[in-house]
Amino acid sequence: MNKKYLPLWLIWFALLQGSVIIVFLLSGGIPNLNFSLTASTDLLSFIAFIPIIISLIARIAILPKIDISNAQALLVTTIIGCSLAEGAVIMTLLLNKQLELISSLALISAFIALLSYIPLYLNKSPKTPQNKSFYQQG
Image (cartoon, rainbow, N blue to C red; front, top):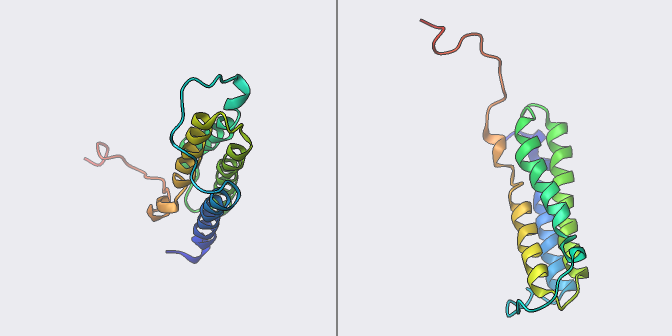
């Protein structure tokens, strides 16, 4: 692994561990999974999903288009996406305790969004322009 990509791994790992610490220290552990579907929900209860969706759009649509040799753009995109996902973890703590279903779904979605930023894409080689395609070589 190239040393210029080490900050990506460190930042991703630190934000993932920070989210785990936030959940266990501030909320008292993993949320109770014995929830009922009878709780009334409003549109405001889904506010924690907004940063998760933005984070996943950045991971799926923006990050693959960045050239692997542009470490600064990769770093900025990773920091923004992971920060949005971690912000959703914090928002789940602010949700009403009566909305345990929404809170649990948002928490699980935020961790999935954080895990999607694991920098395994750094093993790819940089994009190089190819002069001829397979069919033009003949």
